[in-house]
Length: 385
Image (cartoon, rainbow, N blue to C red; front, top):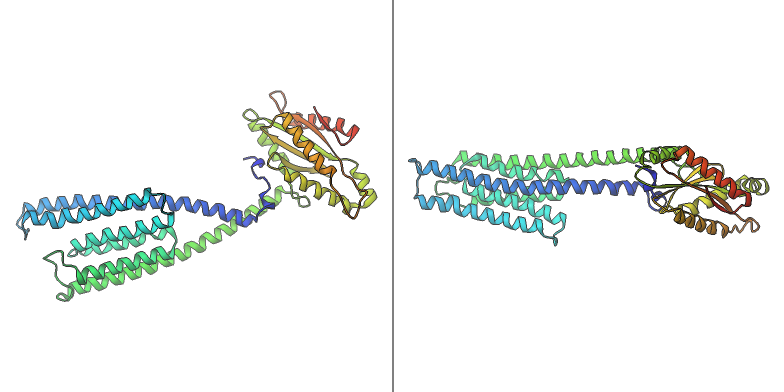
């Protein structure tokens, strides 16, 4: 990617904040992808449980294990739980498609509804120990969001669901109360212990995942700062000569698809400024000049080529537009006023050239330099090759 996209945001906002915001946007995309998968998992769970229920029903109806009537079995174990679960999926779908709910609200809704589906399946089939682990899945699916509150609420809701189902719900007539069977009481207590331990483990994972992400962000910020320092001119804050050379390679690669205009700019009589007022004043002039160039960085990309010479790269601009921008820069430079040095007046000369099928980046620079040479003959002028 070329440098024209940078637009000197480093002067308008902190690079750390810039990068953190970019990372957060990527995390948001990941969360949204996982949220969709989370939602689809709940749909798959409901459909899968319905298919298993139908299969089990077919086996039980054709065996001597059925302890109730066929119609009662289908109503209690197939129709009612499936209807409730599909109602949950319907509500979940409406929430997912609604624009009134934020991403955060959707995450909470999908997480809690998943627990609700698990509650229905557990209550209907509490005689099967394996149904305890539906709640472990519900908790695990929230860990990817790296949000303590979401995981904590899901865990508390899951534990509450098991307690309510075991103590207050008697959907299955064959269910043995946990107070009547030490085996059932043992399963109940073990399931609570497992869910609590699993929740704590998920919290620990979230903590270390956050630390890892934070460390990764910090390292990337340091890398970005180092990379930026290599391409930035320390004094003026615009791109340096190395960045210009790298950009010229990019220009050469994309010249067939995009149009480019190069302007070479020189501060007039800059040596006289250094000789008359000193190099510290000359440096001040360079910084003020660069500040003006950055004001126009939405229209072009400025580079300090060396000394008082700067290069401006225009992308997809006509020559008339490039000249107009140069005139605006020239006007701003002419209006510069230094209170400590009222007699110091700055002017700048511009030489412009356009790239074409017959003109490569080397010739582009030579042509712009020749145009600058013509402009400096009269000074404070703009010339096009």
